[in-house]
Image (tube, rainbow, N blue to C red; front, top):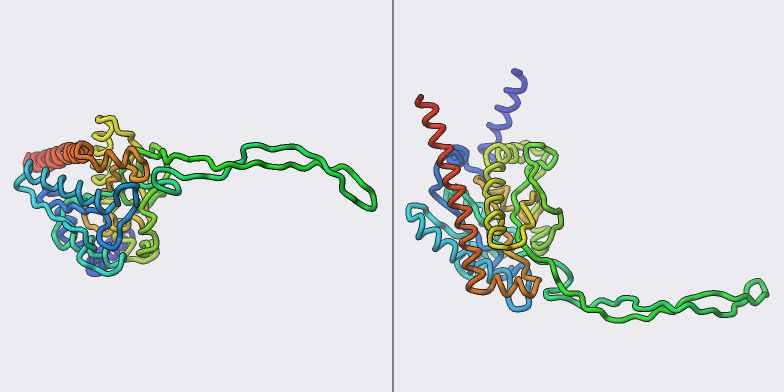
Length: 325
């Protein structure tokens, strides 16, 4: 027991000076009320994200993020709302994608954020809308005479006929991501409606994944798992429930621990990425670009935020009451 306590104290003590992305006071703030919300419009500037038929991911994510921030501020004027970007520019005007992602995490942590919400669009298939694919339409059995070992024999062979067939890009629906600090840990197992993974492929390789053998990284992942994972999962699930209520296809809450959503584990607060819909689907792209669609998406996330805030603060109030009694 003594050795276990010693190990934990050593890991925790070395983590605080080394973890630039997780301020020490953010651990205390995780139990406090929601005062500062960081809104992150995905991509931007020279990093457009997924491409649709009529729009780019960076455009949709910015439009919805700004509308959500405005709605949030109107309903909760006491909450400080901050954005990682408000124009079509690289976050923090950084030149590389790696620096862009690091800036988002640094900004969220330096601002003392209590919740990080990142807006994105999903993408699937070879091309937005659909694509032509060469397929076999017929197989004709034929015979021919060939010479084998000085003998003529009959050989069967086949001739194939091909055609270009249109494959519509049908993937659609919403999903939310949370960072999986350790997928093998029972504490961090979320409910997956399916395990398909789309989108964000242009971010892959931009940053290195945390090295679990590194004591500082291990400590940071431990802090995330203990302080932020459950809250991230609760909020993400609430978002998906709200999408489902308005008839959107709910693809579930998913854990990821790859480069594409690295920023979620680098923020010292509950963090969620919202995939609003598939920009690669012709009809869904129209919806997420429309005034009606964006209004519904904003309202869905706002409803989830309201429910999350009430749950968080009611638990905090109950804890104080229990201590007082």
